[in-house]
Amino acid sequence: MSESNNNSKKDDWQNREVGALWLKKSASGNKYLSGHITTGNEEGIEESRERVIVFANKNKKNDNAPDYRIYKSEPQQVKENTNTDSTKAAANEEDDLDVL
Image 1 (cartoon, helix red, strand yellow):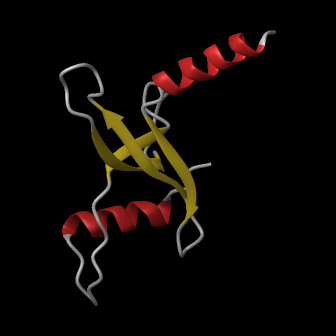
Image 2 (cartoon, rainbow, N blue to C red; image 1 turned 30 degrees about the vertical axis):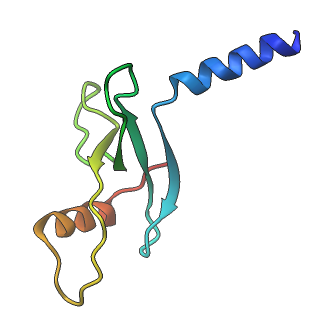
Image 3 (cartoon, rainbow, N blue to C red; image 1 turned 90 degrees about the vertical axis):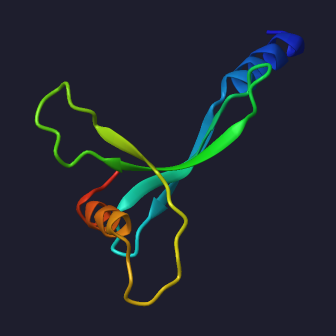
């Protein structure tokens, strides 16, 4: 294959990319994905970046249910003994899940 053909394929993949995820491990040892999704980079639409977190679906009961769930990530707040309801829910979900 020629170098220009390889560059063309690389550029094609770069143009199609909508985000990136990193494999992480919680303090309790559970794996999850964290990263971002970028939207709106078409002409006339302002590009925005949404932070996300991905957990395995622990409640999968049939083949039609998703294997993973994607959630909007909220910035972590450094506060002692105070969690919002959404932070508590994510923490509970994280304790029970393993991504990979």
